[in-house]
Length: 218
Image 1: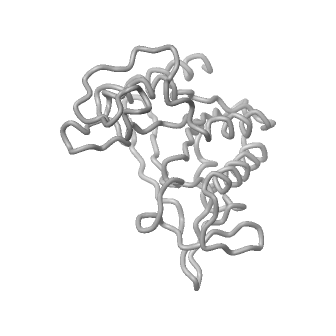
Image 2: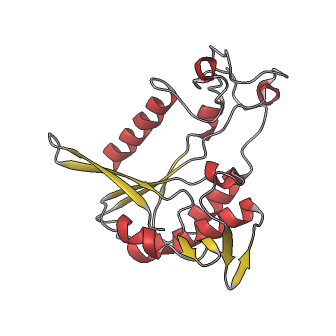
């Protein structure tokens, strides 16, 4: 199952923007038993990534999915085929495989790599001091220096992997500022979507941070 890619050419700037759907970063390979998520392989996906000058990666929310809805049937961890495993552990293994690919294939003099931080969900108002509520109907951000619900557990794992890499990867650390934006979901209009974000708003802030990082690089 090769990664899917959609390209948009911006003629005025002579830039091609590609959206590559590789939810887990590592390869999903079809087999007789079904689609296998290979935690040790990015050979298929990496062939597409090599053609880019700027790479922006993200992988988090899909690791929380359970059947139905996920595009794989089994996980391959080394020589072992598993029906499932701890998803945080699987994400760590996949992220380390991706990190080895970056270290082996990216020249930081000609290419820039970003890793997009972990976007939070706002399913439970208990996380920001409003027990029993969700993002539905929220109209104001949380004004706080810390998030009452604490950090996302996988944050430290992502930082550890990025910190161990030989090649520089710029972490777009959007997690905390996004945790505060309980008002940034379209849930009040669509019935409670506490995962996705609407424009204009939170994603605009992410893009401003990315733009600033690109200008700093240039």
